Length: 504
Image (cartoon, rainbow, N blue to C red; front, side):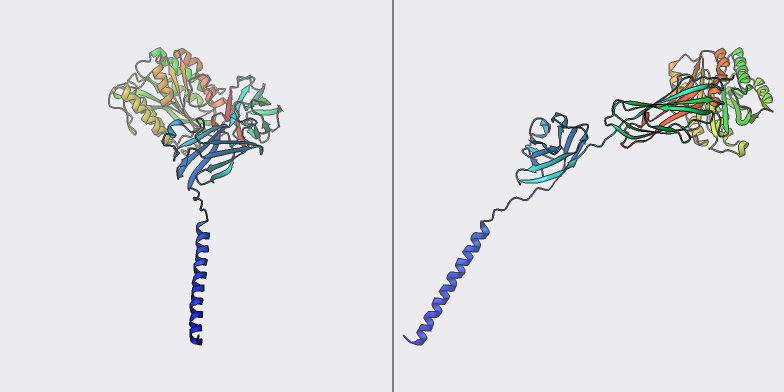
């Protein structure tokens, strides 16, 4: 065989060998590639977990629906473990299982209390496993936030002491309902200036009478702590600011001449007595009568505005004695509108200042029946009770806004004389008295009250008590300042006890 032929055969054999190698290598790669088992990817799902009141909640908030055999693993205390599927028991409501899936908006609820050794507020580890993808779609630790409902009570050994008497004020902090123990509880009870501190005892913690701070400390569920403060009643309630007082008198025809005289005599007696009505220049007095003028549809100023002091108080009581009854209808709104405007335009105490204390006291024997407008002294006619009520409510809102009344210092009170209709009393308490809700107990436990008196004789005998409450009352306030855990109920975090000193 020639040399050329041998070379040709070698080239052919080489080509065949290369082809065999290439095919073999491709087969190996092909086999290797297709022998890999690819798992389905983890589903995109949004689960939100919370614990509230020993109840574990897992809510599907979006993404892929999960099958009912999704596994939930609950682990706590490091050595307790519970594993269950979503479709077990009624942890997912039956109506959510009809389609065989755990869908958006559906909530899995598990009572942790059924687990042995579980302690409320302990952390719980959660894992949710989707069996279709064999992957965890949620992992984390849940823990219920501790909350403690601390309630404050306060009482006094004698709420009508004589000046210079010693009294004991008892403040009680209760952790009746928990649900968790309370920690780092701080309460404040700073004695008002009229009470002189003498001594204190506490069942828990320490009290600083200079700051009023009682650092109580910890309070377990179901327990309480007390602070007793012994104080001397050094003086009547002291006014820390000037006060504008407006008395709005009902002069309607339903009040007899003798009743009108009793009303005036009661006011004269009370305002003339410095033990009940201060004569120290701290009170500006305005008296307005409604049910006067043409047709009896109007209101007018009878006294003031005048600052009552120990020089002019006799002139003031003589002006009250000289007031003539209008004997008209009951344009209550006109009286309220006029009171707002007069107090707002007063030049006493350096001019109107909403920071001054403002007290409105309405004295009436019935409900209004005349509709009035702001800026007008008179209504148009007898419009009926529904229109009269609505107009009086509008006037009351006008007064609150015009005088910029503040719930922490101002009040609108009512003396209801010989009104035997509960509906009228409810209306006065719920729509006229301010702040709301209006107190109907007597003596009141706060500002904004309706005092029911049987007749005008009782009014004359009790008006001094009302001024005592308005001007000489001593309010002792105890309130929760702070605690380590959130208090979900702020309504019982403060308590007030009122003290009404009597002269020696």
